[in-house]
Image (cartoon, rainbow, N blue to C red; front, side):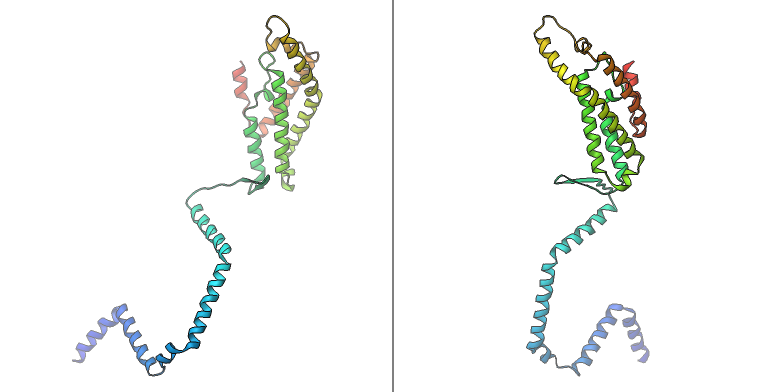
Length: 247
């Protein structure tokens, strides 16, 4: 008989759920001899205290909704970031540019992407290009570089080679534009007005050769090309593609 009960007890002890139920029942049995459960349930003070605590917790949670929402977003972001590659490098909010990381590399990439389409800055062709458009393009490049230098104008950026090179580019373009932009624009406008009143057709190449400072302008364009081809290497702009096409 004892062996039979011992076998049953071993089975109960090996089953964790059965063990938990037995321990719980024994605990309630012991507490029933110590505590008056009816008093605890009917006690108004304990219920009032519980209600107050619940209301306090709800109030704290309602006041903390923005913080909890922010923490939830951070948690979701971290979860997504472990599975996806999401890169936010630069954010413009109300005209204010916020740079998240690697300002030097971002500055380099911005300049590179913009200059990749500006052939006349590296390979001006007098027999093919419209000088008026090329000068305007130089001015847009000047504005773009200056704007980006102001955005990335930090202490660390100023010490970088890219920032220093861009600063040199700004000075070179400024000298070129100061020497030619205003005079050529005025001449170009007058030339177009006079050309419309003349018989016969002349190509833009023939017309712009009549500019009084044409030889000096073409020479300065050649010098500008030479200098910016050197800067192109710094920003990894491929200028050889234009040399091939011009042949």
